[in-house]
Length: 238
Length: 279
Image 1 (cartoon, rainbow over the protein chains, first blue to last red):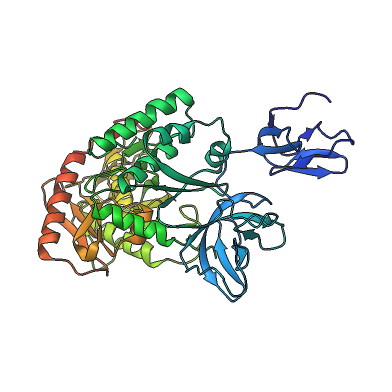
Image 2 (cartoon, each protein chain N blue to C red; image 1 turned 180 degrees about the vertical axis):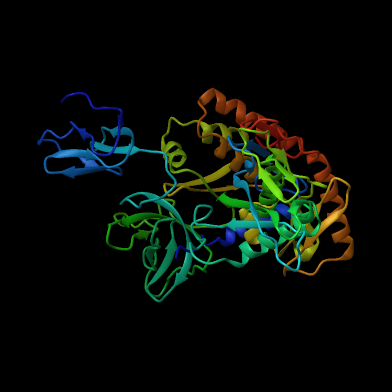
């Protein structure tokens, strides 16, 4: 296998298919005949677990991809499913039975405007996306479901992809200062919940500012934001 | 047509709860504006203004025209706003929205009706030739408070603009090209700026310079234009919660103070320089 480029532009061929091992192609890559081609400009990412390949790029428009966790707002409800806005071109469908322990008798009751954390089960170019709020193999919630209280911020897709990476420190650093619950959707939305409004605002601003900072810069930035919050002075925007 | 993003109940409640505690979701205080910056373009009268992530581009241009017969000494000042899908995807490409008309009318009241630019001063030969000055306002990015940014951009662009010099000898009018004679600035009598307030809690709480999120949640807005002489040039409140006279006085007081801090407007002599007005 020849070396794989780290940066690609649409149309570039990636020498990763050798015809023997199974590849899993994520967002930004497509199969053309026997070769793998990039359809987005960005940085090539690889996870040896399951031999997954995808392209990370900085953009704001969300294109759904199967298996991705997303945060959505319920915009409509009918007998069998909820209609959820996940920021893509079309709203997603969420079946009322796709919750932990949901049966025809015992169904969840979500109102219009509720925030849900779900996983995409269907993402096809010509069909409406579908999400579910449980792990369909185990039947457990796995952290998915309605998100109560808290606040949702809209950030770039790149920041969300970065936060999913365990080596990104901002959430750890924040967690050492204030107890918080965070749900990251790969559709550019982050849900934050803490014990007080003040802390939620501080956490939201720290996450927003962390996009282009490394670990040590993150430490300093979080410290600065936390200290200004606790002296109860209005924070300086920068 | 693209729909506006639906706001979740969580976000709505959080914004209101924060304001009850005297906090704002972007970390500002209730009476603080966002960072404001002004960038002067390569041409005279070309200015780009940002209020946080709201961006407005203004371009001033002029031409010689024949005045209306019933107002032979009055020039023209036209304000053209374009609220396109560039600013936010839910703005329609065709037709003027209500929001656009309100922005346009408030700027017109602020600049023309307050006689900041005197249309009589644009006259060259009465009944024959007058200047027609046009301000084009393009909204590039929408994060709330388009009006203040547009007003700020418009007045900066007018101050930065230079029109060709004219000489009148008898009936002969000569418009000197820019490379022949230095162009001259417009006469601006005073510099009005606009400050917008968004109201919450049945009008009991307000914030200055609302973001798009705050505009979506608020119960009403009021815009006040004040000039350097601390005179109120325009005030508009279109719908929303009724307000106490006390609140209105308090807001105009605050608007005067904020405007005072942003004035005087210092425009660079040559084009193409950046000036940070406020940190």
